[in-house]
Length: 92
Image 1 (cartoon, rainbow, N blue to C red):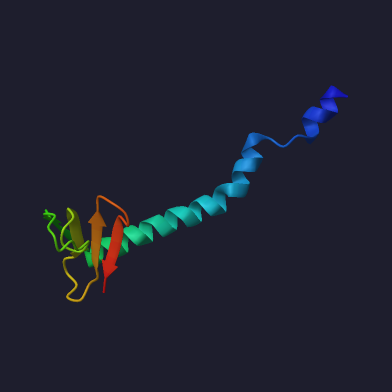
Image 2: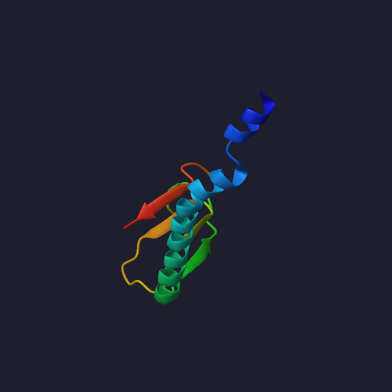
């Protein structure tokens, strides 16, 4: 009975062939994304704002934050990264 069990079990190579189309699709997606990113050449520029607390406290101006935006796009949204909650904000 042990010899028939060995004959009916699929080998590891048979399982690998089932995932081959998925692996090829993933590789093609990664390569196409890399090609588009290379042609567009998107780059981010970030500025560090060191806020100072005052009597007229405002979360937009008085807390240390980093502002990042796309360099090559004129009207790109600005992403604010604060060190305290809400941690992330976006201005359109």
